[in-house]
Image 1 (cartoon, rainbow, N blue to C red):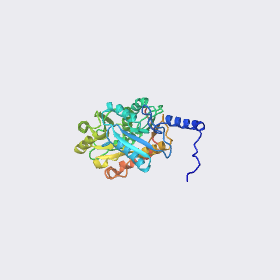
Image 2 (image 1 turned 90 degrees about the vertical axis):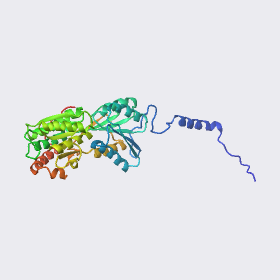
Image 3 (image 1 turned 120 degrees about the horizontal axis):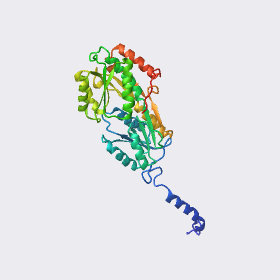
Image 4 (image 1 turned 45 degrees about the horizontal axis):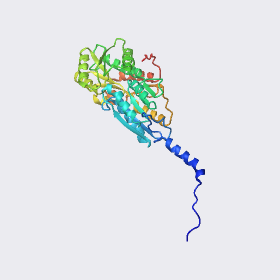
Amino acid sequence: MKSNTKPVHPAWPAAWPALLAAALVFLTAPAFAGGASQGGAQRGSPQDGDSLSVLVYITGMLAGSPPYEMLAAGAESFAAAHQGVRVKVYEAGFNQAEWEEQLASLAASGEYDIVLGSNPSLPEICVNVGKKFPRQKFIITDARYEGNPQISTYLYNQYEQSLYLGYLAGLITVSDMAHANPAKRLGFIAAQEYPLLNNHIVPGFLAGAKLADPGITLDFRVIGNWYDANKAAELAASMIDSGVDVFAAIAGGAAQGLIKTAVDRGAYIVFHNTNEYRAAPGFILGCGLMEQKKLVEEILSDVLAGRIQYGTSRMVGAAEGYLDFIADDPGYSDYVPPEIRAKFDAFLSDIKAGRVDYTLPPL
């Protein structure tokens, strides 16, 4: 039995405005909410609960570079603890001429909310890339740059870390330890020169050493890259011939050449930023600590919550808990004489408490 009830349709004149409005919304909406638009523009800062895509841009290689290893580890650890966070680690290699083009290509994909890096020279590259992609955000540790609304930087107080490592090196060089000599001469081997190294790290190291003995001098040499261990070994041998008995190094993988020469020839080393005691027990006598992993996790937490401030730079050091010294390792406690450890430990405590007066040089 057929029903006599006719289907009810909306009257066309009455439905037209609603249909037209829906069509206009569909046509004007972005293809992917928050995704890339023309020119590879990026999403704004994510809020709590949103997804987050992070590009960890390594200006060099991970292997042999503890600060970069900690940078990647911090991002990956944060992603493992937050379901909506994705991390890609990109190793740019050692050809600096290619860095800007590589980063621009990655930013053009529109895939990443933020680019996370750690290099004092990276802000200038990010400025240039940011001009092409004005919604891309960059966060850089171990660097200082202010005033650009796309960039946030965090600078470790490396003058302060160098100050206490230099003080330890000074105590060693004037000691009666087996490989110390009367020359009162320290050595510093660097991969390359850059403002933070020249203005904070090397001067801080010498200033700290002179607090142990004003007569201490410093022999500073440059390798020219971050990987030539043979060149580092040659420089170290020449410096030992000139009277150097304690070294510091900011040299990446090339520092392996220094370690080998120090062991073969009999010299001591103090390291910035990471634990290297096991590489040469009895020769590597002091290791600073940079809490890069901790800082990265805190930064990404702020990004995810929308608390990050771009256009600013923050300095972090020993008092804030981002720089320290690894004193609980046998490489330090078993090989450094108790009287030296007592003096150094007291000095480091004074640094952390702000009781050591120094003037931070301009960059």
